[in-house]
Amino acid sequence: MSDVARIAGVSVSTVSHVLNRTRTVAPDTVRLVHDAVAACGYVPEKQARQQREEFGTIGLAMSAISNPYFADVVHGLDRRATKEGYSLLLAETHDDADTELRAVGELLRRRVSAIVLAPSGDAARTLSYARQAGIPVTVLDRFVREEVDQIGVENIESTARLVDHLAEIGHTRIAMISGRPGLATSEERVRGYRRGLERNNIPRRDEYLVPGDSQAPPAQHAVTKLLHLSRPPTALVVGNNQMTIGTMRGLRSAGIRVPDDIALVAFDDFEWSDLFQPRLTAIAQPTLMIGEQAFELALSRISHPDLPPRRVLIQPTFQHRDSCGCGSGEDGGSAR
Image (cartoon, rainbow, N blue to C red; front, side, top):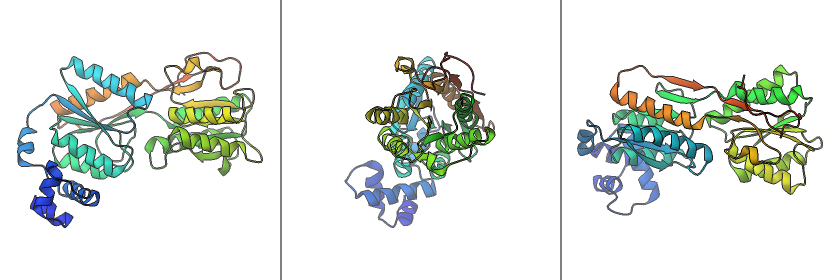
């Protein structure tokens, strides 16, 4: 604890109050202490001793648990965990690196056996913190450079498949509402969008790539911006489910009809996508399976800590419905 205090530039008693939550401490000081904890890998003696045992709890650290994607993934995790006699402990990260670090620290203090993490961006500090505490981490959804167990879907070619389909039915003015910069999934889907344009010989237009920050309100603003261009797009690719909601609101507010006035395709399916009018053409992720396999990775790592890191890449499916406007929408088909 003295090392933590030295690195943070505070007293040992302040470190104790932050870690044990025995007194209110200024947020900036709390952040300094947690950064110092991560830097030196400090774990309280009692916790370090207890962590050598199995406690039957898997910690989950992820953003926006209310997001249908993550809710379904958690359902898959929980379904598999229940069969194995494990419980889950959830911590919200809000896609913020400091909040993520504190969330993982709290999970460690709760003596979880392993952590499943959907990282907010650069996860180096968080992964180092958990590794020095001796707790295995499985990275979910957003792949990282570090050598850890990881699971997620193929994003690049799947997004390119959406562009291919729009090009096949005659569109050349294809825009994308992209996710939050810095997230691996957002960047991979932008790469897929650009790949699709390139292989269909469609010139890239910078004004057709507008960030939607992975949330509905910014996406609604983004689609409004696109519609006010001198040459607005005739087709939209949307980077996730939350942004699809915002995009549809923006189109409706502007009196734009899908697919009569503009074609719409999206990454991420909804349980109720086929209830939209028109039904949404989308890339669907097998969320329950992702959750179940993430649990399997975590459980395997608990039992076999010396296994080499594994990277599981799952192929999503192309759900061909009506919003693309080609007039032949049918469910099914794999993303190529």
